[in-house]
Image (spheres, rainbow, N blue to C red):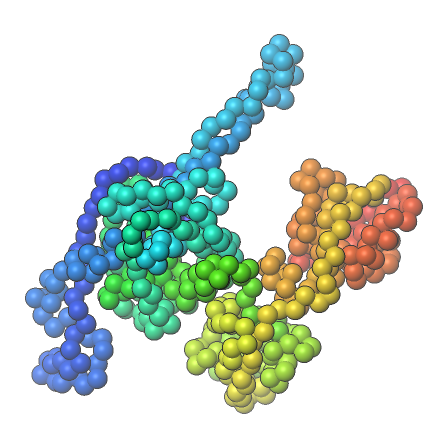
Length: 481
């Protein structure tokens, strides 16, 4: 059977509510286990069947009112099924007028502020024109979208209420440990609010293609379609993550669910409340995950960390003394096992904050303190719509810069001229040109800026040779005679 990562929005829309149980208070600092005293223990296994039977109800009672249902809809226009058929167009005048239908979707959300600020998944509200929020006590509100961030698959909503709303406080997701008890609260399949329990199965999962910032908490608490945007809460009833996807063969829960860590949620939330554009700090370095072959060549004891492939001159990493070939193994005392983990650890920090980097150079461990900055826009943007009798007619291009690359999810140190937009039915699109592709040369002349490309295409020609960097290979176009 086909396995897939499934975002958890669903089109179901029922209204039955459910309740579940929840965990006991944290055990005392000193606890006796098999006749031994454990001093300073903050997490211990249950000591008796009486403790196992303790209820999760107090935590649910505190957390559940802050978890909401998010109903969305939009009107889509469909062409008649006869459109494009010569027979029916001849007798029925082109197949008739386009028909409209309403498309509905359902997800979950979490109130994180008493003034009605709500966190959900971007894929729950993306492209929708109406958003309605229904609280656990059945109060309904029209919601306003105040920020959407496809890179993290998060969206921030706001509702206007006459009184303070119940909300969840944030837990520090960096303090979470594998084995911690968690509860997942949401609206699976539209059956109504449902609570399930489990443990944190893994941390820092990065091989999950759901968002650009791939760094997830994995849990075995049952979550299903409709849980998107719902709460993953810890044993204190605080928000440790926002449920976003499952790994499934059938579309239902197989005990492998993923949640966006609360630290990343808080960063997006701060940006939305401040009303600014979310621009994350950068390291000023391109990194890649250390493989087993790399580890052997670098004489490392195991494949872990991220090797620095390139440095932006004058960037934060370069100013701190980090060089190409160094292997980053820790950020702020947190181990990093791949390039995605480095990106996450840097991305959740703020501008001008300092990050402690531990790295290996020539077999020796070194430390650096990096002052983070926003990615520069060098060279400046220069968007141009290319028009004329040439293969790139209708394509919009722009100068590549670290900030531009960050927005498009490209190599942060990439330079040159990038495709920023193109009509889906244009000649260039039919040839395979896509957003993010780079134009390297035209008729043997190297291209470095949008202005240079515009000038080269303005030259009269009957034959065009265009080199395109797709990210995985160099494509050569030859058009004309």
